[in-house]
Length: 191
Image (cartoon, rainbow, N blue to C red):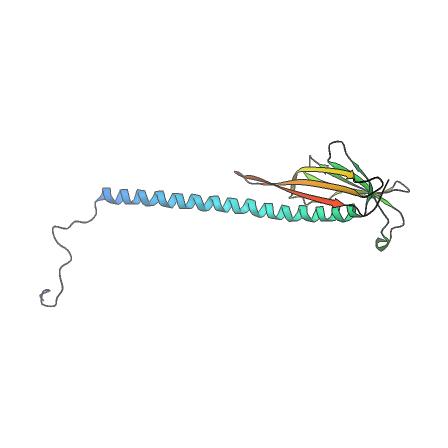
C-alpha cells in the first residue's frame, strides 16, 4: 500500500531524532525542582493552618473565660489587684438564682507555671472555700500573658477593670501570640 496515495505522510524522518538522555535528565531535574517547591509550599501551608486552628480554638476559649469573668466583675465591688497584676479579687453579691445566702469573694489567678487562668470562690461571712481553685481555661490553651488593672473612677463610685490576656499557639517551626483586652465598668458603687 502506498502511503502517498491516501494522503498519509510519514511522520518519522531519518533526519529527525528523539530526545537525548542529557535533555531528558535536564527536563527531569527542572520538573523535580518545581515539584519540590510546590510540595514545600503545601507543607508550609498545612503547618500554618494547624497553628491557626489551634489559635482560633484558644481564642474562643479565652474569650469565653473573659466573658465569664466580665459577668462577675460587672456586679462586683471592693476590687483588689495583686502587685504584679496577675491576680484580681472582689466581692460578688449573693445570687438568689443560685440559692446563695451571702456574699462571695471571687479570686482569679494567672497560674504562670500551668499557663492557665484559675478561679476560687470563698464565702465572705464564714471564710469557707465554696469552690477550690480550678482552671477556667482549657488544658490545651496556653495563657502566656495576663494583666489586670482596676481603678475606682470616683469615690464612692463604680470601678473600671481592664484585663489583658495573651494566648500562644505553636507548632514545631511557628509560634503566634494573640492578645485580647476587655474593659468592664462595675455596676455597683463602693467606698
